[in-house]
Image 1 (spheres, rainbow, N blue to C red):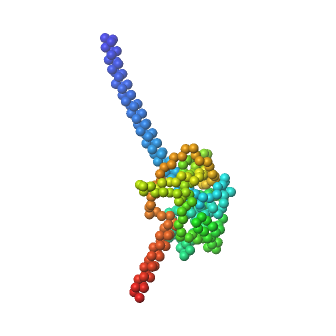
Image 2 (tube, rainbow, N blue to C red):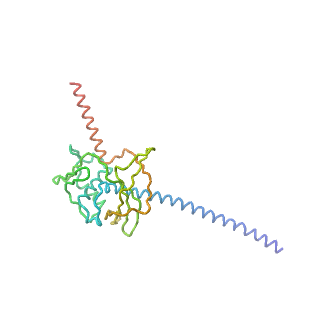
Length: 266
């Protein structure tokens, strides 16, 4: 009798124990799935964040500026030149600015806005004519404008952010500098990135919940560098200089057509 009760009691415990194991297994599975999804989301977020840094640094490495340990010691003309390039590569419409035969007239206030976004407020921009990379930006102190020629250039470098280190009140980015004219098109049509010419350590300092470039320093080649094929996608979202060039080209075509029409009529 006692054996039957014991055997029966064992069966009574078997069901709840089995359910418990099943529930724990299910919880474990959900945890693993959740962790995997969270990991994927984190990887996507990290990738997007690095792309944001690369977009920010594109006008910076474009001219291959001199390095500096602190932004207060940087070459002022280069900082202003970078700020102008940052504006030209933004999404602002060229219709925003007056256009002349020499190019676009960019107000110094707009350049200053980009300057603060990139380099903070520890230094104040000093405006003057800039003999920059590929073109000159002529400053008119009376009008307070820069004249930007409608001419495209190939950047000296394009950035590839390969590492990010977060520190108290700052972020340190390891940036591979890829030669702008070193990209090659593969058989499948994708663009292959060149081997980096050099690496930079760019420090972003935090102030008022925003980050600005406080230092640009040379650094040694990282021990482990993963090189991935880059793809280049052509879209209709041209930068300011590209948009203005298209507008100028279309205007020139229209003018030529009208001249030909008038000549034919005569």
